[in-house]
Length: 539
View (spheres, rainbow, N blue to C red):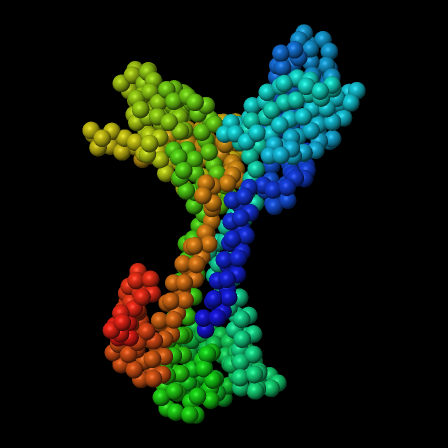
């Protein structure tokens, strides 16, 4: 029984090592263009600059190289006074003339060592722009270096969107692990069973299928089980009380009486065992009942686990969390400012609020808070509605948006206040916040719409997902549990063992501590044994 699990564990380890290697080594090979501002590496990692696309015009304007100005829009062309259908437009100091220095439709990616460049060609007189993509925590900053080679203009883009994104999905889910173990175990069960039946028991024809009687009767058992449940739900099949009824009702009741009183079938034991001894027959029936009970319990547990298991976003900072979709990080909104609120004078129609997503602030009204309710224009009319030092993350069931809870209040008056900020992803919006008040509950609701509320897939330090060691532990403890459970049942009902004898391979387990001790002593003595024969006495 352990072979299927061992084989599935081996496959799990191989696949997990491959995934871990693909994630830990980072992007490999060249980055092949998939759109105007996207590319994909050979091992699945991607670069996506789409969030930096300008709306209605260039994303980066008036980039100065010391001699000329440049306007740049990475993902689409734009037109203005001196440039038409341009991704990069060069202008003179007085805006009297301009040249198109590249078009998005003629873009390509190139790798030079560990550096990645995005080229835009097709400009006037053969002008070309080269942008080096540098991974950074910044939202996006562009630096111009001018014409380093004739008619070739160099830039450097520093952005979080220039970071290579780990291929998705990044990890096996618990359900995937269970399904993989089940199907691999199922296949190995049939393969090994057919070999044993063919060469071990010299079976022929359909008899080489392990437990062939069970599998041939399985459709009928399923049908009988469904009809039996339906019969029970319908209250015993209607006219079973015997009031006239018809012969159909009587035969149905007899059928189910026979079904309930018949010895249960067992997957792992041949029905021929019952003919050999009463003990084997009792063991088979008891084992069948136990497995059926446990099967129902395991099935219900899996259904409950599947229903209760949901997406989570693990906190990695006051305004940063990680889920299976990637990382949501509001820190670019903070922009290095801790002393002042990022959002001020937010009105819910009754009160005003100041809010800073990632750090506590102090101003004329508030002291060391992340969310401050200002009830008036005087400095003593404010309330602590949440601190950045006490945040937690969650995912709403309705729309799957991330929310951040800030806890605050007044410790002296023992009045607690809290704020919930729901983050709505919008790649075209930097930041827009709305306040909805508390409705008298002292729990204040806000909605923050921002591109920083979108998940960005970035590698996790130390790797992500289920590690090979975790998979080994999961498989090991499952095997140990099955070994002990089935072994104890077999020793109890199959051999009639009592007391500590029901432990499978009990002599080995009881002698194991002494064997370990003897092995350690033998190792420390470098293999030397007592000439008096003490090593012979180890039992």
